[in-house]
Each structure stands twice: as structure tokens, then as C-alpha cells.
Length: 127
Image 1 (cartoon, one colour):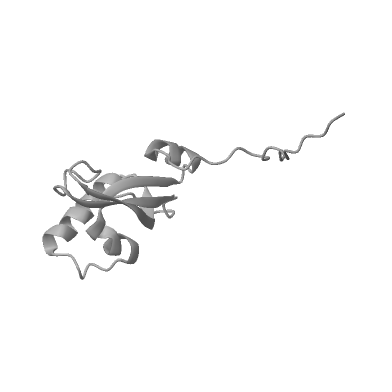
Image 2 (cartoon, rainbow, N blue to C red):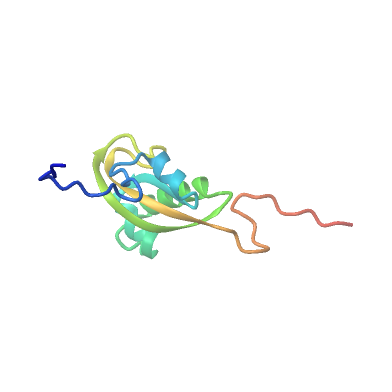
């Protein structure tokens, strides 16, 4: 039997990961990680807690977005990358006008025992 001069390797054991995922596809792969397209200038504040580069209105906008978005859960910002560029349509549209944006990833955490989420009603004392 003649042999082929071409060598074909075995297929990979698992299919390759898609290079570009939508936010929903990325979040579905890691349910404890959520992604948001947010203003780039919020990065240092969200990741390091450093508000020195923001004015009072920008801090209030970032805090307002955080309180609304994570009102029923605890989260921490773990990553800010994939610079998207200047856009009018982003996930903080109610808090910030058109601006340069970046994709942020937040790790959702279980709230500590005994701590109520932001905006949750206080438990009623039993009489």
C-alpha cells in the first residue's frame, strides 16, 4: 500500500476556545464572573480603591452605578482590560456620558453572614 507524504496529526483532545466571546457567553462560562463595559477612568477606583484621579461627580457616578448594580450581591473588580474605545453606549449610560470605555470583570462573592445587601430592609425585631 502506498504511503502518503502528508502527515496529519490527531485532532486535539478538546475543541479550541473561541477567541471572541460575547459578554453573555463569557459570563455563562464562569457564573461567578460578570463583565461590564464601563468608563476607563473608573479603573483605578474600582480595582485599587484609589479615587485621587476622579472629581467628586465622577466618584458619585461610580458609587451610584456600583450601588445599583450590586445592590443584592457582593462583588469585587478583578480585571479591567480589552479597551473598547470611545463609545456612547455602555453599561453606565445613566451615570456617565459618551467616554472611553474598558471591559471590566467582577467576581461575585457570597455576602458575609449577618451583613445585609445595600438597600435591603432591616429585619423586624420580634416582640
